[in-house]
Length: 193
Image (cartoon, rainbow, N blue to C red):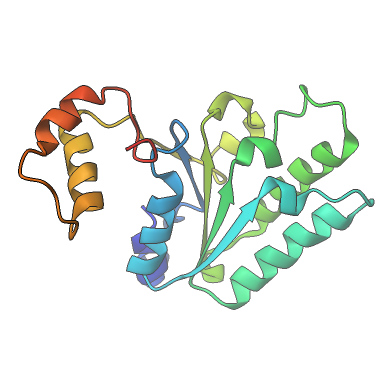
């Protein structure tokens, strides 16, 4: 979904199909949303731009929107690029729930920027949230974040793989049982482990 549009944009152009512009990663905190986005950027040799709420929201009128525009322009110029909006629910909350004008303007600017992305920009926007129903619904329509991927809490097998990766190269005592550890850590995400 992300790799093909960045590596082979000509395929989409030849088929006359619009590639996905935005992908929304949903899952609990610590499940690896940011790690997955970074891995994808590395895999496709794309520039990786991270945007988080506190660095976008400014107190002076228009600064927040200008900062977003600047990041989108830079990503377009340096494509292929992945723009990663971490905790997008803080950056673009549902406009009917917020009272501040800054948040409403930031959401409107983000909508306009996503609509302005074209095939030739070679940019994919990835949003990450653990509260998908708190982001503005207009962002979840086709042409914006029209693909959503849920990253669940890992099961026993997934937890064992995570523990194996993190303990790789570590000297472990002979009585350490990674399978038993994975069994006892039900509900843990990667960050917990």
